Image 1 (cartoon, rainbow, N blue to C red):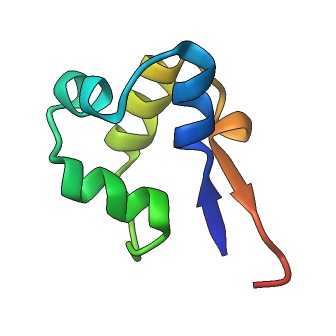
Image 2 (cartoon, one colour):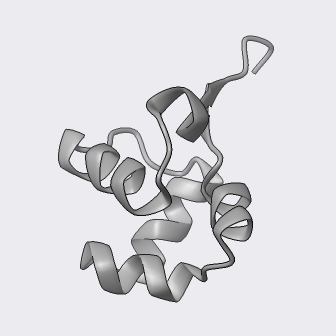
Length: 68
């Protein structure tokens, strides 16, 4: 299973989920679904935007749990 480190990266930048949603033009509901792993797919545009606004690489953004 793939996990997103969005909350950890937001905390590191001292930013809120609201800030990220406003910049990415997505709803808080959809962002929370990604954070909780409740989505089955995510667009490359969102991945690119997440990396851009969180100032991170894909490796820092995502983590694979091989035990899940």
